[in-house]
Length: 587
Ligand code: SF4
Ligand code: SF4
Image 1: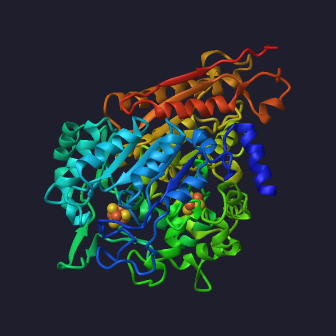
Image 2 (image 1 turned 180 degrees about the vertical axis):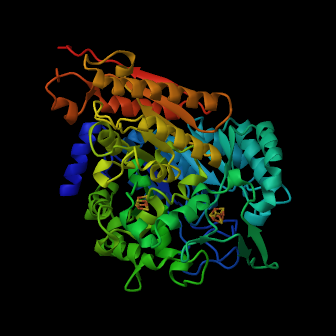
Image 3 (image 1 turned 90 degrees about the horizontal axis):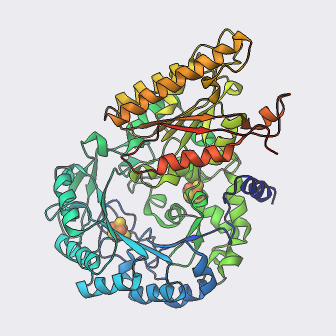
């Protein structure tokens, strides 16, 4: 209960919801079936594209169970229902259109989002689907190649049929995106696929860099994966050779292992940024189990946890006394107690399971931290989230000076990682180490100042650090955002004592350097964006403690919101500076 209380206090402070409270959850992911027409080699519903996974239950969530669980008043407040499963494709559910109609009847504007391979039904069915969605929803079609390549991964899906179905859906008014996993065998087709997607009318084509070649036991990425179809000869699929489409975490894997010679140390210590919590969402499996995410369901039924030779294997840390840790955790609370076929959603979300899950993230592995959470939602091995960099709430943040003042506030807001002098890191002397860290993150906030400003050692360290990060990110052709925390003090002499000039001049230099880096993106020299944030006096415990405090300062949450806004502007746009002033004598 203490954890939940702390989280509520935190929410109140930042007006963000980070709990699994029934009233806060605004998205449910529904796996309505574990049946599928396809046999993708890296999907856990089958063994490398061949026989069915014998441990997976073949089940469907009934229309009645869904109808009972999702009361009209719940549907009207939800943001989204996401139809996507660990083991099945929603279009295989015989009642799928009726299930959608039920939701639409309860809430005309509820966003209905679907992931599918698009490979079954005729075009009439897809037109009807568009009419039911009625503009409030979207479909992502998983089509990994063209006529001669799609079936190498989406075994069992006819490319022409999937394209016809997508086209029928779009012509009937449906919004659609093409998701294309890039492999060696289809990497020569990206341009053609982009053109085709425009002709058909997809809103977008997303080229995904898969992390599924990672062997979870050895933590090595394999170059190839052997496909063993049921009725054809085995063949291999390979990781793409195009650097831009390789999974970013896989590219950084060796650096991570160099930093943590024993990877258990990483899994033990990495802050966990729970995708479910951050997105205010939970998942419901085809059996009716309410779980935080698909990864928990994988732990229950993926063959690799039962027979460790099944690719991509399982890490030793998934097990405690030979028992799967997540499965044991779920069983402690009783599967029935988490099942919508037995209880209503509010009762299920009131179960201690959820508080104890949140509480586990602050523990060490030996004391109950769930390895799956550290593996999937840690800060530096982010292979799942690197596949789709348009989902902004999966971004990882790194902040210098993260232990007090603005740095601490931003850290709490973004669930960021970072370093400060408290940890023995100093931006004047540990530039290389901080640069090494920065490459693992999407957003780098250059916040710490090398002051105090009247000290001789103030040596433009913020500028030096910016230049070093810029140089490394440029070498790596890395995408992301750099934010530099400047000060309006650079625009005027802040004190009569000339010693304070170090502060003013250092912040003025940072302003100049930051804008040069911004120009780097504008001129197409680098793919990442740089923004300067120039605040007046901040409202932090530190500034409140000073004699000069007048009761007025910039709310740190406002700065966090500007950072969010900056990240969300169009991909071709960069904001070079945000300036915030405060009326120091405001009543
Ligand atoms: S289409 Fe989806 S559910 Fe079906 S086999 Fe492929 S990844 Fe698995
Ligand atoms: S793996 Fe753990 S931390 Fe990640 S989304 Fe699932 S419950 Fe949350």
